[in-house]
Image (cartoon, rainbow, N blue to C red):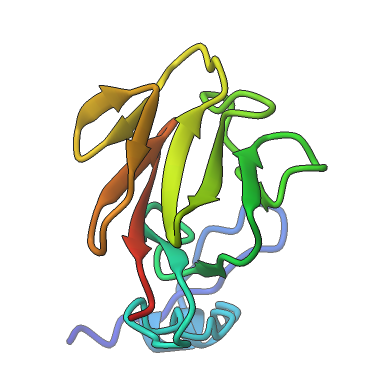
Amino acid sequence: MDDTRFDATATTGVAAEGETIRTLLEAVPTAQVVPAPRDSEESSGRPRLVINRGPDAGTGFAIGGSRITIGRDRDCDIVVEDMTVSRVHAELRLRDGRYVVVDGGSLNGTYLNRQPVDIAELSDGDELWIGRVRFTFRSGG
């Protein structure tokens, strides 16, 4: 490695003669440590939706109750920060011990395993698309 020395000026930020590349790199602030996402296969014994694509990949939502709303609105049970998602985009409803996804009349639709659906029963491993967010349904069993 060339040991040419440069000096960085405060006004231009350009290195000048007298300072090594190593010295310049040492002045760069260190990156913030970000914890690894939780294991998407985390077993809680309860059904869950796990985000499998995007900046929140690995984030899981435990599902409980007879009606779970998904959308942009702050009153939804699962809030999705994405402009392609309607305020109340879809619902998960418990029917005979199994969850069913119901589209809430969303503009961009709800997709299950890449097929548009208005209402469909969920099975373990199904991929649910709501806007640009991709969830995997885990039955918890």
